[in-house]
Image (cartoon, rainbow, N blue to C red; front, side, top):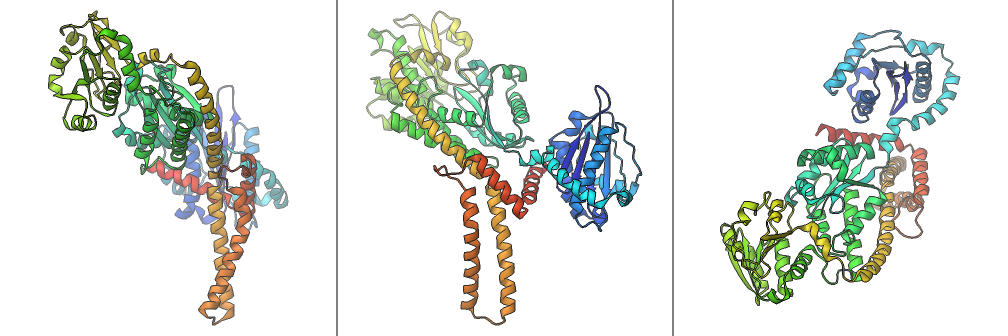
Length: 620
């Protein structure tokens, strides 16, 4: 395999020495001799070399017994050193393919030490042990090469270089990916191990963005789902890294995660989040609480390094979609949240004769507990006991529901309160179960049903799974809420179809907005390029005119700015897109963008900026 670096490009070939081995030759083209001793110039080459080694892991994945590093130093006499470098690189790569055992023509130890020392500090130990570095100085060989033929071959070489692995990597259109587990794909005992508290979401974003192939990230963790949304440089490697991260934080093996996870990419991932925000992916169709949780993701992500333009825009559009669906379809009418479904489940399980006299206990006065209390009140419950760590939250709820008798009890009296309750709702953030089998079997049973009803809407679960083995206990968790979704099915399906139409419209708007982001670097570079020309030409003009008044200076300045804006108007109109109907198609816009890059030589600067950003993230 040969990797040829020519200026800002890498050209890759591979040579198969036998059925199982590859020879890897890395050729770095230096356009002037003093480049090796110039640290600033080295920095223009090293990031691409390091990215090919560390990021793409070219060497580790395709390495044979030996790797050689070739430094080619071209003389200054070439009128087009880049073209010469590209053409010569192509010929070297071609000869490498035909010769499975290339030998160095010469070894220059001083050059080897100068270049290899800073490089050695950045390589992983595993790679360093396997890398055999040789430095060849072959500039004298160029004298025997026909320069005109070299220039002609450079045209084809440049085309090949544009398709090289490094070029594709640095300019690859990042993918939006979602990797997750939800109530449809994984049981609660798996999901609860992966649950991430809201306070830990920012830290999770930072950890995810520290992974090599992840640029941006967000985490949505609820009782029904754990979903990780990322902008990945590579779909395959991004999914692999996120899955390993999920395994690390949860203790669930990668193989088990792979059995239960789902993965969606780009438009499918976007549509999925829009459906989630609209309540179409919930146990109870159209539930409203999930939209609030999506909003919370955006709120907690703001200001966190890694919750950037694309992910932030994705969640912003999801919130807009969720609001539209609820407003235009009225899909949220009726019992549409987990908490309301929990109350309805209790009503279904309790005998009608005992409903008015049933003793209700709610454990936890957080968001979910508060919603349960409100739904109980809406269904006619006039008295309940609420157990919580502190009384402050209970006092707030009591103030809102003044017609309901809400009795506060501290957590230390939980078991005593449970002994007197017929129905127990649990909704705390406890990491371990509050009720175990040995606790519940000692509780007296004095209900018409002959057993106590536990409705656990917490993840992780507050009621141990073995409690359901007792004849005196009937336990339901979030997975059992599926039983409620039966009434008005035809109406729900009609509203869901209306919602899908809205989602498709918003998906189109988001995709247009996202595609327009691809043009942002080009727009910035083009504007800066023209501003440099404008300022330079204006200075030349003023210097030739001699003494001019401030009014005349302003007139010249306004003239130059007006000309620049007029010139920019056409390209900007074609490059920008905000989802309007007359936008360029994505493929047309990308063609225009690449044409502008080529015309004004903006491409190199954009690629450099992309690599520098990723290298800075590696350093951190």
